Length: 305
Image 1: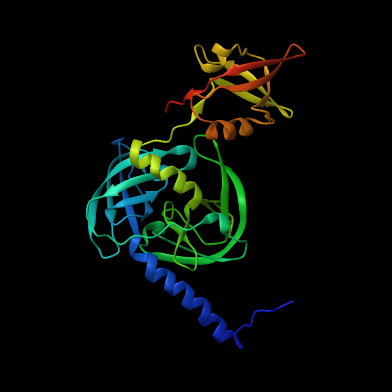
Image 2 (image 1 turned 120 degrees about the vertical axis):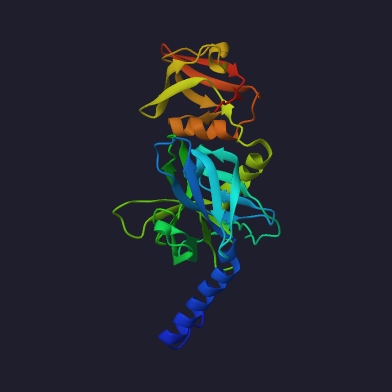
């Protein structure tokens, strides 16, 4: 076994760690913005969050829950300047959104490859927690591949767990590796817990932000079935009138066993399948109805909203 050579004393070790964090902050810090939200509801108090510039012409990644109810948006840059911003697109299922601030030749950060992360590697968060601008916290990746629920109830997959300290206001800010690349967008912390924070991986952001910039939303397939878990199966408790499932002959009470040969053991399996299946492409659905197996072909349409 080959052991890496470590600094000979604790001071040198701290210097190496500090140097890495300082380098990250110098590279990415100027690309992090504070977002002020003026709500559509005049009786509701405005909110705030963080975001990260990913293009020099002002496009910013943040969380959907930060900007979803915004009537007006304003961003503040690290140099003290402020600018109005427009909501370009929002995707509640991944808790991601893109906004655009006015201005050109702005500092921006590069997105890294979150699929290559390893548990234990150093991660740095930059944001504006509790109104304290340009706050830095550091820690390590604690776990990969976590799942959690978005605010709309849809399952969010491949979430990054870290022990980096996050607080309200960090939402939408970047999680960065020691190469200065954004590996996640900070999305949640567990109140009352210590050292447990979650970030949407950059791989998800890469898939989502292109569609948000071009169409303002993410297109997903729609089957037209409201389902519930039934043991290790999925039961249709409602079939939408005129939807793809009804047109294919699916009935309330049918048990959805498999789509395209892939077993449907939970409603999350169904959601994952529809997120990746092409809109309009027919797929074979295997059902259990009155103790008999039934095969139907259904062509998902585009989900609305």
